[in-house]
Image 1 (cartoon, rainbow, N blue to C red):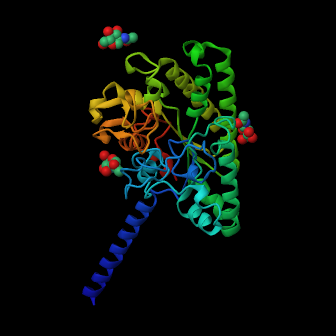
Image 2 (image 1 turned 90 degrees about the vertical axis):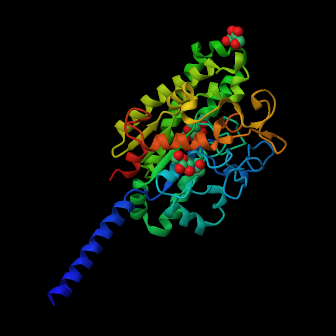
Image 3 (image 1 turned 180 degrees about the vertical axis):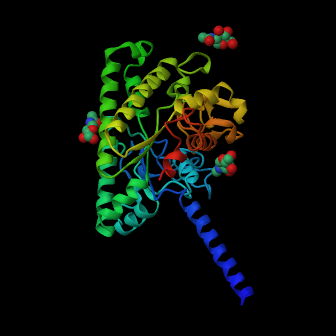
Length: 373
Ligand SMILES: *[C@@H]1O[C@H](CO)[C@@H](O)[C@H](O)[C@H]1NC(C)=O
Ligand SMILES: *[C@@H]1O[C@H](CO)[C@@H](O)[C@H](O)[C@H]1NC(C)=O
Ligand SMILES: *[C@@H]1O[C@H](CO)[C@@H](O)[C@H](O)[C@H]1NC(C)=O
């Protein structure tokens, strides 16, 4: 008798321990991720947009290192930053593109309740006017999320949905395209660009619309924001073409880093006003700057040129089926004339997920944001 109850006790003990283990593991993954922004995160929305001028990564060599070696709409040789952030958080990859689900409400609801949805669109900016007509601008991405939420609520009720959304991660990376468009329009005075009143006016409209976006998402139930700032725009191969000796274009970098400063104060200000809002702001700019100061340390042999393209720095053309690829894609920081390689995306996401607070993320890293109870 005593022997048997010992076994039962051990079994019960074991059960308790495995439940604890299971719960501990389950606590790591947020219920879902909702993704907003541009080509750094787009995983195929633009493939569903009509028109010849829509930027689409829907042919080779995009996706050459993706499972199955297929183009998926990601502006990468493989996975992109959204995928790696999702993987770090316990998902298989980025949640699917909204436009692949929009016509099938059942699928949209299932995805939005189980993993999330991506609204990111290559070419999109904070302003509707940025590359207008060839992408889903940020304001429309938020509207699509609102439509998604209505379907979720119809299925599960608003209490359950608001609870799920409050624990989910809202990942945003946007702003580069607005700054690129601005710099292109003032190309001939690029060096003076950051001095002018135009820049102040630009920042003020970008920041006020970015802030409006966060407020709208908050009103729709978002509470946890993972925000990636604008990276070193002046160091992408397409920008280096305009600098001496393939160095970075300082004026464009300054345009980005000043914007990032304004973004940081805006987010801190918004967070202070919205009860229950938590955020992690990732410093893409600072992280890249550090990596580029010692590229060999992470295995890069080339941080200036594109892997896929043509001409000087392989940056005079987009990555096309006729392009010649570099020999070792993981040793290149850039895949095409503007976008990071899969390796760079992996490295970046990993450092945003695990980061000493204040190093690449503030006030907490993406892990702290995702796991907060
Ligand atoms: C700014 O944001 C508002 C609210 O999201 C949006 O309706 C408007 O179109 C945006 N303005 C521009 C210029 O993008
Ligand atoms: C470019 O590189 C050459 C050769 O290394 C050097 O002599 C020249 O000063 C450089 N120019 C600039 C603008 O950095
Ligand atoms: C991403 O990086 C991690 C850590 O270095 C590595 O284990 C993993 O294989 C990488 N993933 C891909 C798809 O390259």
